[in-house]
Image (cartoon, rainbow, N blue to C red; front, side, top):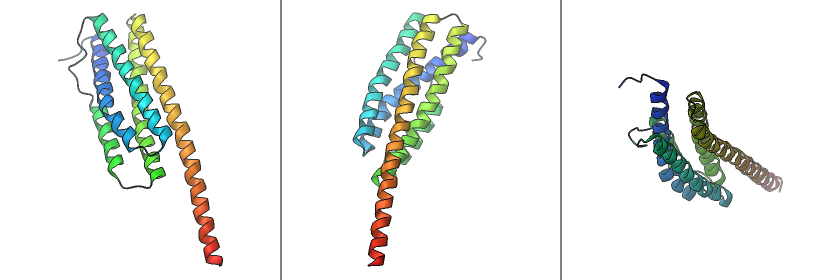
Length: 177
């Protein structure tokens, strides 16, 4: 079906986001389980709670539109979730696994930030100020989740670098002896 209006595109994008969020509801517990860092696991568990709220906000928008949220598959999220699953299947050292999972999660967050920014702008253009407020709330939470992941990656990087230095020092000490 050819989209004839911005409203049709807006609804299509909302459905895409709804499906993306539903995919994340299923993927986030797996990411939490694969995380070795307690802080990272807790961050995924918190984001799962937030993602459920994101789904509820989208359902609220669809209810106001008197439409169903289903009917579209978000192929972008399918690819991101598949790439994340592949990342978690690899055999890696603990810190390296957490760093890889953070990278996969941040790709998801950036995708969502772009998508929510777009639909919020569409809502504003269409005069749907209540929708825009709900979408902006989710957008801000996605930005905060991305920042939290960045902060966690800095901690992991610092720990990994410190561990590498200690390993390197002990190797040099053994070589000198």
